[in-house]
Image (tube, rainbow, N blue to C red; front, side, top):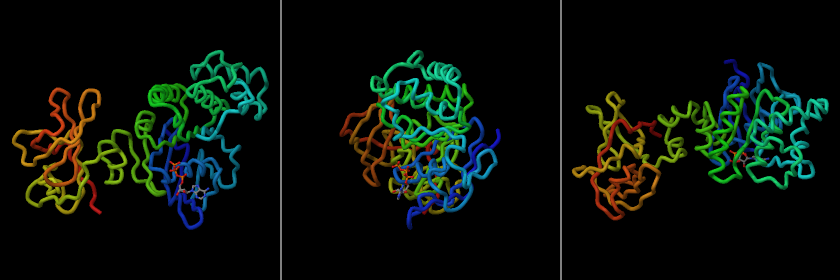
Length: 344
Ligand SMILES: Nc1ncnc2c1ncn2[C@@H]1O[C@H](COP(=O)(O)OP(=O)(O)OP(=O)(O)O)[C@@H](O)[C@H]1O
């Protein structure tokens, strides 16, 4: 795979405020990269900088090895599907998809053929003459996607592509999108604040924090080994606390009491993430807690526990074993589900 997009030390500031702060990022050809992060972390600014919609204050954006400084958006060969990119209400579906083709001087017959092909691809065969006002939210999203794909962009950029849709539809579309991008070999840079969407869509995820890249890796890598407490909390893990790893044995002292860690973990001040699956209910546990809440998650229950000492803990528990709210339980921790994170 060769690098299609390379950002080196890209910075963008709005007044005093850095929206992007020396960001390095590479996207290989045929790769789908999802940028994740809380609101205001710079995700949209990143896309806009790549598209040439926002000027870059420092650093370089290379597409196919060529510096894009001074290259206008319409000459960058990128396709955009933004949250606020509405379809043209006065044009029908075919007219919307053909728009970019006509602007580029593609002949009418060729454009018609291409529109039909794209409608097949996005699962709306024969919808050319339908009015966009008569489409559901999901159908509109598919048309917007077909419109972005029509000029065969070398890089497709999506900003919260499924943001407006309800959860069921999003989950379905995300699977379809992934299959579609695979089949077409499209290179994709997408932005979302929804981690489920990012993890389902991406070959690689990039987590942003305050204009910087906090972590980049495959979904599995990031999920298994969050780089720090910020990423862990952003992924929804609650069981994160200060800890001191002992010198003589693989144990960390935490607000919840001693917790086993992997042998060889360097001693000293750290933070610890205990996955919910690493908090076990045990009759004889050293720590004790009261069950304060239960959330059903399909094949297991997520328990919210109030320990005798330390902050609230989440524990994953098999459906049949789930204790009732108010029950008193003993706790034990599994080193295999404990991740040591850098201290402050
Ligand atoms: N046109 C602008 N003028 C001034 N400040 C801006 C402008 N656009 C963005 N910002 C600021 O830059 C920072 C990054 O914004 P950006 O929109 O890139 O974040 P984001 O991660 O995409 O957020 P969201 O998930 O809410 O869309 C924020 O602090 C934002 O307030």
